[in-house]
Amino acid sequence: GFPGLGPIRSFPLRQLRTLHDCLVDDCLPLGHPLVHHVLRQAVYHVGELTSDSEPQMAWKEDLLRHGVLGGIRGVLADHADRIRSSPKHQDSFVILAELACFLSQLEPLEEHRGVAGRFTDVAEGWAGYCEGELRSP
Image (cartoon, rainbow, N blue to C red; front, top):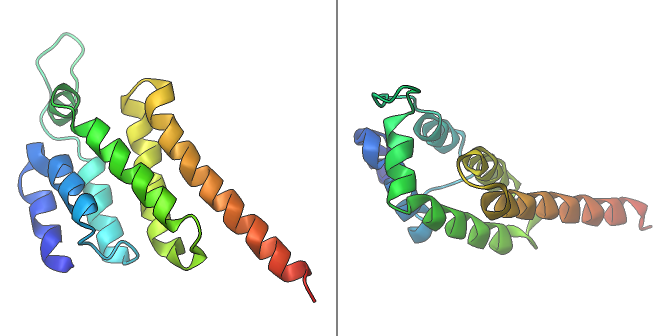
């Protein structure tokens, strides 16, 4: 659980690789507000900038170059599929959907937005379920 949080923020260039590993291992209590806070710190991290004429965040360049983003995309898709039929996972849904939406900005539209769209489908499914429960006698 919580021991997995330390490494996420320990090494700035490895943050998302460590996040990927934690998501694969399913070792974080994703519904806990502290975990949300640490994961947001990791993905919204600015850090060192490249020396290009139009500077970019160095960790994002590293992320794109080594294929970590594709791995995170796959793991987030798996989590969306796993929680689809379980509205009790609404606390983990919040951070997973936020990660999917943020990371969708870093890749071509079709690839990552498809994962963000899965979370939209999950939310719509839950809303339909709740609506049905409210209307039933």
